[in-house]
Image 1 (tube, rainbow, N blue to C red):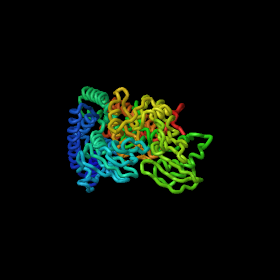
Image 2: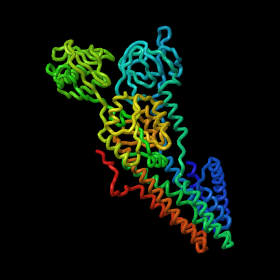
Image 3: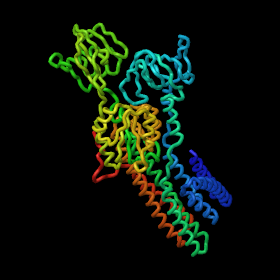
Image 4: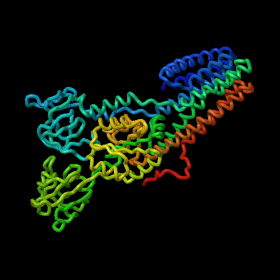
Length: 605
């Protein structure tokens, strides 16, 4: 970090100066050493201050530079060194708070399709995905990643698009269906026609969006900078008046030494690091101090649905016999599970899990990829699979398998993603914390998304959204409803996590890319941690503000006393240690939970 070398530089200069003064009795050499070092750092800080002013901002550096130069100019070089030590130490601590954790997008890049099977003159050739051109015919084998966007020409299969839409249910693909790069083919081979190059396809677009968002992070204004202008003006006025009446420039330096902005620089980063420590003890990793501030001020929270508000695992939601008097629900479930027992399909696994282990034996089992299973169960011919495979009309807006026995339609079994039990209480807690606009952005169908949103208490729903749509929704949130939190768990959420003011990844089972592009990672599979992160952040920022104001108050009192001339510069610099200690102790309160008379309902289990 750029600020760490300054701290080590000042410490090294201090040690050498101490040896020169008391070891070899060369105080003049020590003075020249400290003076030279102080002027070098002051020049660097001055140049950085100029660049800051040119960007339209004002920080506390001007006051710090003046204090250092003033002490050196009047010969109070040890006081100047102490001020520099406090200043560089505070900067280093803030730098640590702001860069506590930075991740690379290893998982996202690892999932980037790299190869393709192109059909040329009837022969399949292996080429790099980047070499695929629009119009090329490609073969996607079972279990492979689709290399580019395209349309299916022949074959049928169930394709896993969860890396793009976040939805756990497989999507059937047959002739004429669109397929997207980054999706994973199921058990059937597909022949497809490329409709885009790799660079213009969905998954590669996600990678580019995340890189762009990471490269252009939202600006973060240090809390100290917000108080810098009034504090600096007060310090200059008191120091100038003291100099005028005393007629001695030493008085100016004595006031500015105690006006050094070290409490301003120390209070916020220490409070932020303390808050980050507190969140980590609760299974929440907050990567930067800026994320703490954004969480504390959040007015909108956007959620992905699958794997975030829901568990992301399909389970049997209902068993519907066609004729209950002929076959009850329990028997229908057990016969279907018996037929599907050896299938690797995601719905088959859910069926078997729901039915348990006491299943009748199945014989003559054959599976038609992307359609269903045929088997003999209890000496009856059983078909289990899609509506078309069984020969019936599908139910609308449900994910289901259909069953026929000896040619007669027996009923259907539908599946649903389970809403997290803590989801509704989490939304209630967020509302109570002042996050009034709760949004769900999902790749799922509208009826399903609307039902989940109503169940948990979401205010606004966007359904059937791809990653590009999600990121646009985040960016279009009006200014009065910002900052925006985005909560997600998959690779498809990575761009919107980066685009939000603060991205929160459910990292316990989520994709690494989502976790690494987020500002906050929840290490436990517990949505209530989102509300807890907001609550801790608000506590932290309250304590940080209080600590800054305590430091300012003490400094103003000391400036008024120093203006009378009863506090020498070296004593004033030492008093800064007292001010810093008080400020640090005040800021460290952010490590521990605040006692509340009426707490926000965070215990949602």
